[in-house]
Length: 486
Image 1 (cartoon, rainbow, N blue to C red):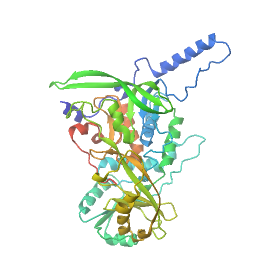
Image 2: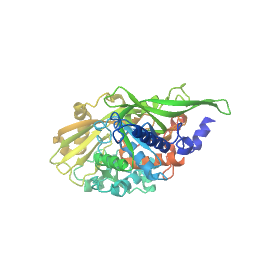
Image 3: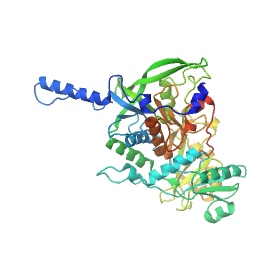
Image 4: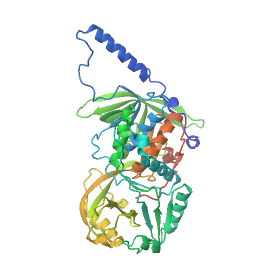
């Protein structure tokens, strides 16, 4: 019974899941009450206008219709689309809670900023196709009156995936799916590669797929700041703090075949603000878990996964932080301006950075070699032992490269199938997810934010059907396996 219900799809939108009413009245009613209270206090106190006894501007509001946990590009994109799609301006009050207000450890700004349509799943291809349209027309979406236009510095040099003999058939199948979805991708033989990219060694390469348009890289920091600037102009509220607790109510039910189910609804989010040991409670109707690498912890705070093994209640959100290194090196004789982002069969990748013969790159470690995610320290030996040999083999000029700097960032790694988690939780009925993209969340954020907002407002996906990315697949054991992960 539960399995059949989970496969049937999504339920009602925000109105059905609780946005229509607060336990203590609507947000608009609350503001009206506060205004009246202020007037009454002002009428009895000497000395003119009412003013608070202490500065509370750093605190979150006591009420918000939607609380978004995580202020990276995914969380900001959800906020943007909620405000853009709301039926009446100002109808939905949105609060974004971000613990790292400097974004110094944010996955967004520590990434290499790539965007591509070369995925194996149609849903991922569709997400990236819309997102690149969003990025290429960024000022039509994110322009703010009297502010300068955004310049993402989009470089449409494409992605070049290389395949060995073993991987050639899979690549052919992937490209077939990509073309069916409208992506402009071509297959290239080793001979064609030699002519177009003479700086590349073709040893071990049987086939390649090359993005002809709408692929490349851009400035992630600019997108982050552009989204933040825009949503603030739309009335979205921000709080620098950490979510420490959810207060929820429970409703115990039994299905027609006797299965016991506990439905939960979050009523209050506790936010610990910076430089304080106290928390601020925020009454809310909806919570969006867009906490990236830490979204698994946020899910646990809501009680997700705390139940008997093998049950829906005991199914965890399988998202954890995975540390990834990015290295920047200089090579005077390296590939020129025509160089795409190259993904080698070994797992190593690189792209050009700027105009001065500088390059960015790295490689995901093997499962048994995953580094400790407890810090963002860089392992320079990893480059020498695991990355550089593959780079030098593929591009002989890289034999003489010199690493200039390096950094580490986090993937919000979905250990189940390396794909995003989008939409509501089936039991914590007013928690929605926008997380788990395992390295491609930045490039798909514009489309993911729109999809989550659609589900919240209308109860179902409207523009791109992301049902394969629902949380329920973890309980059902139905993987949405993406094979093109870098």
